[in-house]
Picture (cartoon, rainbow over the protein chains, first blue to last red):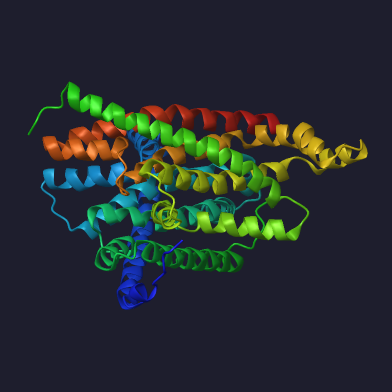
Length: 222
Length: 216
């Protein structure tokens, strides 16, 4: 092996990498919020009595979960202008991330709500609890705790998925990596460094989510 | 705008061939290394457990796209003359081995402890205990998650397009550029992925429900 590593060329661009990391975090955060909104609305629609409301949600979840994110983002990227909506790549990326994450969120939230057994709810009413209290104490709190682990790991997955948004030239880490690569020709060094940055971001997120869980979800549900 | 004719469809099918091949290679290669990772991850030696935990953590904590780039350029640095196909296949194998290793670790640990104790009481060796007692049961437990990961892997092969590999998504991109019909082309591409992935997802969740019922 005659190759000499040159990480200096990459480290010279540290400010750019820092800004791009913030871009990635911004995309991830906005995507998460949109995914959560779609998830909650989807669950409400999914539990509707009307088949006309339920079926589109089921179809949406199945289609999104069984096609690649890259194809979804291309589709949205080209479909929006045809509908007369012109958005910049970053907003388009957030919409794609929100739609993708939302489909998974619907399934996760629905699973959590369904995990609360009917008997517990009936027991709550039998104890003379108010409807609002039954919902808050017997449905919401246990459901939140049941949902939290899957939902947060889905959010970390969503953060890693932001890397694919480079394909429509959204401003984030991977697109910065590709820019720096074409300037310096230090392909391996660039991608190695950026991979390490992603690892730091996802590890920090994992730690933060665990910390929140320890403070807010340490009550027993069973 | 150009029409989507026989030639375009044939080109997509050729892309599909590489998508399927990549998924198969990733799944089989990842499966072989994944078993090893799972066994080391559940071993009595702490060193093995720590190393494999790190390996799994790295692959689960970084984007698949970055893993593709790093392996793609890393393999070239080793001075080995490899074509894009081999580099991408190596990346998918490593990626899949980490995820399957973690899934199978969970399944091995889900086999009731009494089984291990019984195997020990019968005087079975590690190899026989694993091969004859634990792994067959773990395999059954892991089926829904394993199928679920296969779907992830099939969808993940689309990222090879960004490294310049012509599989289904990249083929779609090329045709879309030629015919100026992105919605139709990506609609067809999405439909093909759906036709492959949906039955698998369905089988996986069906199996999960059946096993949950049986456990009750």
